[in-house]
Amino acid sequence: MRLLFFGPPGAGKGTQAKKVAQEFQIVHISTGDILRDAVSKGTELGKMAKAIMDRGELVSDEIMNSLVKEKLEELDSFILDGYPRTLDQAKFLDQATKELQKEIDAAVLIDVSEEEIVKRISNRRVCPNCGKVYNLITLQPKEDEKCDVCGTKLIQRDDDKEEVVRERYKVYKKNTEPVIEYYRKNNKIITIDGAQNVEDVTKELFNILRSFNKQ
View 1 (cartoon, rainbow, N blue to C red):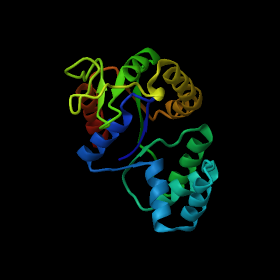
View 2 (view 1 turned 180 degrees about the vertical axis):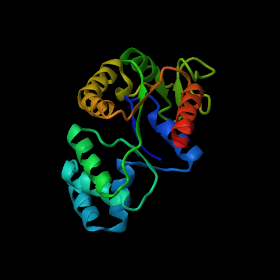
View 3 (view 1 turned 120 degrees about the vertical axis):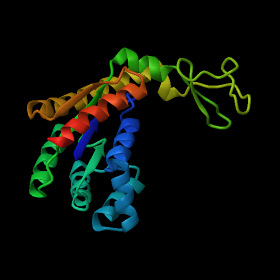
View 4 (view 1 turned 90 degrees about the vertical axis):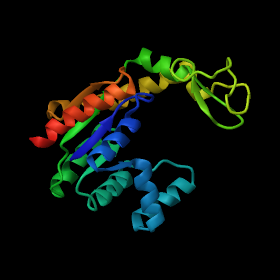
């Protein structure tokens, strides 16, 4: 199987992608993994990407596209997580996978509303001392806002504040919606309700992919 995974920040797509990779024995790769791999191997593209990142700049679409294609040449089955992020990247991937005769089977969308994402992320709390992460809804500390491990008062990271989460969600929708529509038009989208608990999302996803795999 060759799959793409999409979902807003906090939807749990990374978690589900890892579970699917383990269950179906598929390589799960993110753009970060691809970059690190190319840099560690010292390929020409890897050297170019490293020089850009060392300057604190973002790797261009052109280089990222080439890195993705280079990585996919090595793999038969894969889950791509975090790519494509733009319509241009989606079109490039379409062309590249056709050339490699490794066309994408499905794009999995873990769909979660803005309000649910805000609720999940804004309730995160972190121990500044030992780094343990809590959630005031799903994983509460035993003592109010204090770490179970070391007793330090928990904090809310700036990235987890409501206004930041809403902004990130807007950026996700703006950038990703055209990509989702692209795969929807091509009948490649599998939409899962990510508002369910983690186990139910996994179960639904496994069932769909098992039936899909038999086709």
